[in-house]
Length: 441
Image (tube, rainbow, N blue to C red):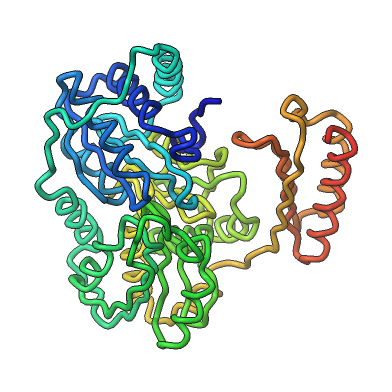
């Protein structure tokens, strides 16, 4: 078994599948296809990270291309280095996954995500190298340490709030025991905020464990208990943000996107009065954008797809419900710390508390998700299933939405139903899931 590129790089169990030989072959393939004359490589805090990043550094260095070790560093910091130094970039990380997984994210020179054809060529060359038994992991050839890999990136975040400070804000930051554990507090304190830091003691195995952007329950309790203005939950590589309001409520990516879009629009700073969303974005976000006369541009799930549309020039703000937000004016990828600083700044400028601000932003429609396991060869949406989807949409009318799509990474069909009433959404989602099970399950 081997691994394929998903919506954001390659990811899998380490070292069972994602091992030193795999990443060696991937590093060689990427260096050949992208033709970068220099590479920067960083990692998150997983136990498997040091050996995998060393293998990638050695593989590139052995081709006589400089490979610079950035150590533990957030994904957006590597993207920033790739942009400002016009070099290739690699992050060894499995993002929000548990410590038993690891992954590789690749940036082409300029800090951009890979184009589809580049990804396909790298994957083709990777498979050729994996079948060549002569390719073996190397060690420590001419490895160079980056002198200060986060300095320019941190400066770019502080520049994004245009010389304002965060003085007066009290935030709790959950670092998910990941790659932002050593940089989040100095950044926010340097901008004047009062900071409580949690889950910032990585041990190689506690990354994302009951914490971070996918487990915000403890952050919610702490925000309320200490009377903080805002909670900020990062994931393992700090490229996404889920926020918590002062009353413990969730401010997910959709609600953040709504807040940022309307704030920028009020200030005349929202490019083309447009925002890029995905097919999974909440119906309430769509309604709020329509009410504000802001155009929504819909793309498939994945921040690569959001970024691709932003680079077309139709908008400079986009994101996902999961908390990947891209401010194209400031960054080439999702950046949880940039989003957190901008959200705290927005809160201070609003003169409201975060609970009030979040509730007023948009009405969050109940969204029910059901994954239906199917045989790998039975993922097509048949005419009978489509007919049932159409009937369900007619029943929901203008106050609901249905999305049924085969997963790009698993042998499942994902059923999503939104409705004004959660019980209705639950019933309709289960009805469609049962129909799919009987038809192709």
